Amino acid sequence: MKKTSYVVYFLIFTFFACQNSEVFFEDALCIENISTIDPEIGLLENQTIIIKAGKIIQVSPSPELQLSKQNTIIDGTGKFMIPGLWDAHIHFSFIKEMAPNMLDLFLAYGITSVRDTGGDINFVNTWKEKSLANPTSAPRVMVAGPLLDGTPNVYDGSDLSHPPLSVGLKTVDDVKNKINELDSLEVDFLKAYEMLTPEQFKEVTKLAKEKGLKVTGHVPLSMDVIGASNAGLNSMEHFRNLELSCASNSDELLLQRQQLLASGKDDKGGVLRSRIHKEQRQIAIENFDLDKANKVLDVLAKNDTWQIPTLTLNTASKRRPFATKEWQESFTYLPKNVQEQWLNYINNLKKTEVTPFNEKYSKWMFDMTKRVHDKGIKIMAGTDTPIYFLTPGRSLHEELAVLVEAGLSPLEAIKAATKNPAEYFNLENELGSIAKNNWADLVILDANPLVDINNTKKINAVIKQGNYFDRTQLDLLLDQLKTTK
Image 1 (spheres, rainbow, N blue to C red):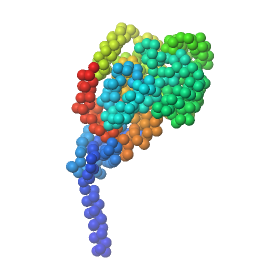
Image 2 (cartoon, rainbow, N blue to C red):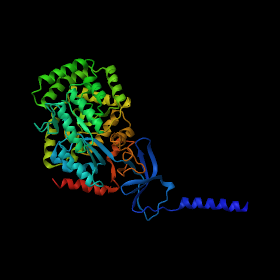
Image 3 (tube, rainbow, N blue to C red):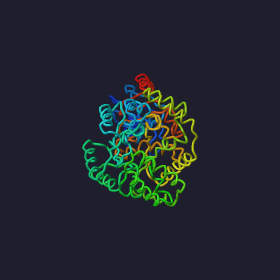
Image 4 (tube, helix red, strand yellow):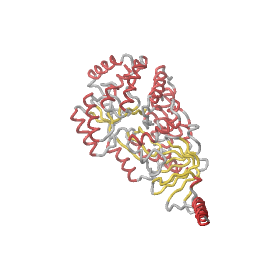
């Protein structure tokens, strides 16, 4: 009995000794007493995160882990950590002279991964290669290469509004050849565009599936949304042409589009597309049919066709966020001539009134985002930067705020910019959450974004694959952009 008592006392002593022993993590960064935000479950208070060799090696409640003072420790008291953000719709090629500024801008605003949704493959690969060469100081870059368009192609380089982002493919064989070429260049996904024929579009999705690539894009004007989703479209950008399939007269509109495409085959692609949108979009919005919309959304949900609403872009004609002083301050990080062009355009826009259709279309976009979300269709946060005065980095935070305005919770908006894009690329076991063995792509905030989504802008630090950028270093990145025009 006496011997047993000694054993019990020894075990109790050992337990408490172990509980109070200090732990040293060699060559590691330790962040303690911080509140973390998991995209699935939400807020976890008073956590300690251990980062080593670019990855998270341990996540523990702070009271359960006594750190040795020999560790490199950052006190996270009063701070909030979220996974590194994604902008799931960007274009390095849209304003090429801006591209050299974009990686640093994204990083300074907490965007640690981006998805380039269309541009000259050689040009966009320049930035992907730079990212791969500098994984601790540049955002991860996923690329599609050029928009796969039919003829006439929309982004043909004919004017500033239509830079050469696309390839015009005349036949199904052209589609095969281009996809084989892009696959050999190791693109991360493909983007289908609006002038493809149904036969070409189906070839895109068929080959993509064979090669293990996802297809995003705009629903071709020659098709309806159900047909495109059933053919294998994995995700849709901007809800583009969704309104045309949700109208009570959608069959009539489709027939009319096919006739307009045939009669306009000798026009420029941008001109033809604008003509069709001008003739049909307002009619479709005015003839919105909830029963038909539900049937379309049910198909999207069944087929797991994700959505990237780009709400900031699609409601900008009404909301005009770019007209604010705070937004325009971000222009100072852009090349001087881009600043001047944007400010001139904006000053001219201020003189125009918001049209009744701008109001209707904006409301339709907000309502549709809520309907899509309520159907359980996954959403990714993307902006289309730098189109329509959307500053790289800054615009993603606006997108999060607008998603919340449309009906997502702050946590759901954060998930749309973290866990969901990681899952889209089958990287959910590496990115998108604050978990052991994940890459340490993280953002530390000064205030809780679950209380106010605008707090994602209150960035205290950014961690890229283990490399810690404090506020001073982030400000230095921005200041350098101001002085290198």
